[in-house]
Every structure is written in structure tokens, then in C-alpha cells.
Length: 482
Ligand SMILES: Cc1cc2nc3c(=O)[nH]c(=O)nc-3n(C[C@H](O)[C@H](O)[C@H](O)COP(=O)(O)OP(=O)(O)OC[C@H]3O[C@@H](n4cnc5c(N)ncnc54)[C@H](O)[C@@H]3O)c2cc1C
Image 1 (cartoon, rainbow, N blue to C red):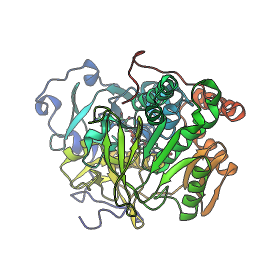
Image 2 (cartoon, rainbow, N blue to C red):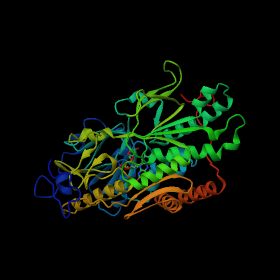
Image 3 (cartoon, rainbow, N blue to C red):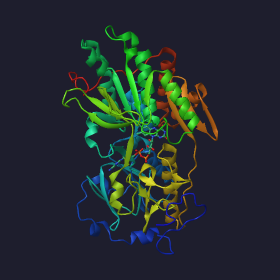
Image 4 (cartoon, rainbow, N blue to C red):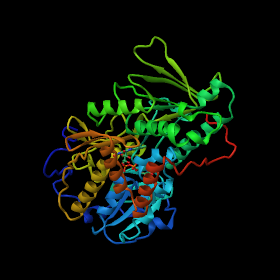
């Protein structure tokens, strides 16, 4: 495996098993689908030949998958993009849906619509369960899909570090459903507190614990504190929402522990504290108890080196923003993965022994500098784009090339006109960083309509301290959050 991780390696790489690059003809010389597919094709769509050329199957319509599909627009291939959801999701703004600033349609777009003008591409709504690399077949819940080239881009999900039962109370933020559920619990908590006469329960209802102080945790904690102290303050009669307690827990010694220089972590910490967020550094969560725990009060236990006993914090709202684990599809490739399930890729993003299979985005482990290419959108876009370029090169009987990651910097927002930015060696915070953060996020949103609407919503929120999406969805009579 030596040398496989060096994604910085310049120049051309040919990691193919033989000296001849695999070609369309060689790949097509594999057994036909009838001969290699043991299970019937379930959907007529899966058999449709919408274009000619080698069949490139892309799994995942996130940042990497969509970038790959778009890159192949003019290549002499037919592209099939498979996703279990019908929409591409702009995850960096999910916390804004969870905290009622934006509505789901503003940060998502139907994949079918995004690719509607790309004549060589079709979209299949299906969940991929396994890759059979020997037969060159993707197995999905809608039937098997044979491929000539495969680009895997199924991303990552939450990891509760072996405590999957915590997910019941500490909801992670990864999908629109997650964001809507967090929003529901968050808004319901204030409603329940308004009707509550017991001081302890009211306090627990108005306590929000966010676990993990990476960008998502910092942004979520800042947004909740801001809403409680400004946006909804005048909407209630029996509670003072500005007394809501927001606790941000981080196991490391600083907020934004990776990807940001120390001084920006310190600045973000100062901003959070100025907004009233209680930040607990060097603190681990050792228990997350749901509402059906022994005393009926949901809570977390926090341990830090300077405390003899774990501290208990009663909270009806707990958000998990700590660990991630790669999509399980990577494991079915039968090649080495790291301890988070990421597939260790060759310099050209292919997998050992299978130059026709590429792994991209959050699912890939690709070494960079002293660590690995980070799990962020620009990296996923660059990887997806690069894998597709390599497919086009192989089809054209040219050798594949090594991937070179271009670091575009790091941005995180803390609240209104508060953000931190590390871009091209410059480190700054405040309004300028916030404007940059807003501009970059609007720019990368899919669809012109979404860009305009989000900009308008943000401008109105900035000027009038309003949040447009404070609707409680789900069961009308749902109990207060567990
Ligand atoms: C809350 C949150 C905030 C973030 N904030 C930032 C930020 O501010 N800046 C930044 O750069 N990055 C941020 N990230 C990280 C960034 O979103 C990821 O790095 C990026 O989305 C990775 O792209 P991807 O294409 O690898 O995976 P994804 O974008 O996650 O796409 C994976 C796709 O695969 C599909 N899929 C998964 N499994 C299957 C299956 N078995 N079958 C079919 N389809 C499947 C999914 O439905 C999804 O569409 C954030 C992530 C989260 C969760």
C-alpha cells in the first residue's frame, strides 16, 4: 500500500495493473449484463440506454457526485447517477434550516432538474447496497446496474463513537429530515416552557446542549443563542427566552479545532461567550440520557480533567455535531479503509487493483500535507471533478493523473456580522469575514432562484432580526422534545 496515499504527488500516475490503460473495448469485453447479473433488473429505467459509449455509474448526487456528472457532460460516455434521495443538499446551510432561518427548498435542488439538460445523463432514485467489483455491478434496491466505470460519492454520516443509543436524544444534522426534527424540538421546547410552571423543568426545556465545536456546532450554538436573545424575545409572555442556556461541549482544547488557526479559534470562542454561549473545552460527554431515563429528565453527563465528578446538565434539546463515519458502501469494495470507514485511495483516486473504480469526497481517504484531504465541500467538488476527468482520460486511452487538492481556506460564522476566515494566508474575523462567508455560501448554492431568495432572507433577517421559517412541523400534539 506504500505510496497510495500521496495525493500531492505531481505528474502522471498510472496505477493500472497492466501497462495498457483499460479501454472502453477492454471493459466492454466483460461478460454481458445477462451473463453477469444474477438478479433481475427491477426497474425499466435501469435498462434504458439513454446515450452511447461506456457506462459511467456515479453513486451519490452530493458535491462530489454532481461535480463528476457535470464534468462528463461532453465526454463520449453515458452517465447514470444513482442517489437514494431525489435532491442535492447544500449541507453547510443545514443548521440554518434547523434554527428556522431558511426553509428546506432554499438549500436543496432536485438532482433530476440539475441534470435535465445534460443529454448523456440519467438519474435513478435507488439505494445502493453493495458493489461487486469482480462482476462490475452496483447492487441497488431497484436492481443491479452494470458499469464500465464507477465513481463512488456517497459521503459520510454521524458517528456516535459506539454509543448509537445516544442518537435517540442527540439528533445529528445531516439531512433535511434531521434539520426539520431539530427545528421542531427547538421551537416546541419554547412552547412547552411557556406553559410550564415548574422551574426545574422549565429550565431544562430552555437548555440546549450542542456536542462538538467544529463549524456545525459553533454555527448552531451561535444561531440558537442569537434567536433566543433577539428574534423571539418579544413573542412569549411567561418566559424570558434570553435566559435560554446554550452549552457547547468540545473534547479538544479549543473551538474549531481543525482547519482553523489558533487565533481564529480564540476569536470564535470570545464571540460565542459574548453571545452568552457556555463553552466547555476539554470536556467529554460520557452519557446522553433520553426522557425515558430513570428520573424522566433528559440530560447529559460531562467529564473534564478538573472535575472529580461528572457534571449533569438537564436539557430537552441535545444536538450531535461531533463525529462522522464514512458511508458503509465503501466497505463493500473489499479494499483498505481507515478507522472512520473512509476508503484509502490511490493518488488518482482509484482503488487498488481496480483502475475503473474511483472513490471521492467524504468517502475517500487521500493524504495531504501531514494529514488527509479534509471532509469539506471544495475538496469533494475537486475530487468528483478529478475522478470524472480520469474516467474521460481512460476512455480516451490516456493514463489517469494524480489528484492535487487546492486548499481554498476555511470559514465559519458565529452570528450576525460575526465570523472567522482563514483565506490565502490571511486570518480575519468580524463583519468582513461574515460578508465573505455569506457571499461564498450564496455563490455555491445550486440554482439562481435559491441564491436570490437566500440573499433576500438574510438581508431581511440582518435588518429586522426576523427568522422566516419558525413553523413547527410533524405531529401537532407531539410531546415536548425528549
Ligand atoms: C451539517 C453540516 C455542515 C457542514 N458545513 C460545511 C461547511 O461549512 N463547509 C464545508 O466545506 N463543508 C461543510 N460540511 C461538509 C460537506 O458538506 C461535505 O464535506 C460534503 O457534503 C461531502 O460531499 P460528498 O459528495 O462526499 O457527500 P454528500 O454531499 O454527503 O453526498 C452524498 C450523497 O450520496 C447519497 N447517498 C449516500 N448513501 C447512498 C446510498 N447507499 N445509495 C445511494 N445514494 C446514497 C446521499 O443521499 C447524498 O446525496 C458540512 C457537513 C454537514 C453535515
